[in-house]
Length: 207
Image (cartoon, rainbow, N blue to C red; front, side, top):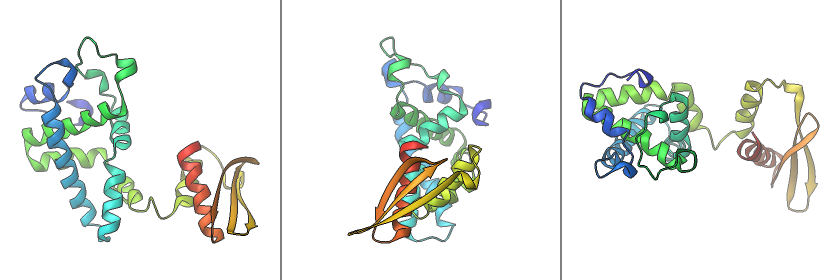
């Protein structure tokens, strides 16, 4: 399949991977189950090679294989159009994050069955680049850096935003302003903690 950069020897596996449970008894649920394990194993092996702690591995794995992330991968690959669904399935209403994440896992499972673990790993590594994986390792550690990168990707310059802090009885309140517009705020016992909280909120809620 050109979109995922893998050529199936067994075309029936490819067809099954794209068959949603609403289509009938023969569907991709078992492949989804298998693909979830393949994805977890491959990602865990990649993270192990980064020489980070078990706790950091756990957090990064959760960030990389969550439903939101896998759903976005399906959107990027532009392959959800191939999914086979039942007559009562409304693609405009029912094509949820969960469905798309399940599709990704089913494809991973199908690639594994068709070409083995090496093929499964190659498919996953083609979809998740090294920079993205390393970023996931630090996702809970430096929200300010992530926010800066996101803003620059959107065309903003460093002088377009700032953090303004004020003292409170319980610590500090920091407001994140983008072109003088209050976008998000955060609190913390220290200014740096409050800045991270504000950056995290801006990343999650606004940008």
